[in-house]
Image (tube, rainbow, N blue to C red; front, side, top):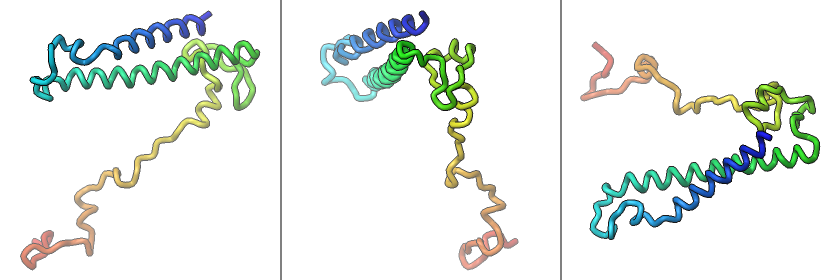
Length: 144
């Protein structure tokens, strides 16, 4: 079954990542000591280490979702939408085997990203509206 294969695959990836993370940084760089290394020289290795830690966390979350899907399968609830109770589309289950929502319900609860006000693009013309001028040496900056 696809869920069992996905579970086994994720467990293998997680185990490999955990083993890789257990190797001391000095061993992974083939240096006898990090004492004489400039901090910039070790920056790439540190970046990779932190990236691997983030990936490991994502893989563990994915594995948790797959385990939940297997529990739903045992309970006879796999393939049913948690919101509306209807069957989840086959194509959706093939793409996202651990999904708990049909496409319609997933679309309804999907976050609508709204850019924060402080990130709005402001044109130079809007900044120079009437009454919003500033003086330089006693003269209006926008006055010709």
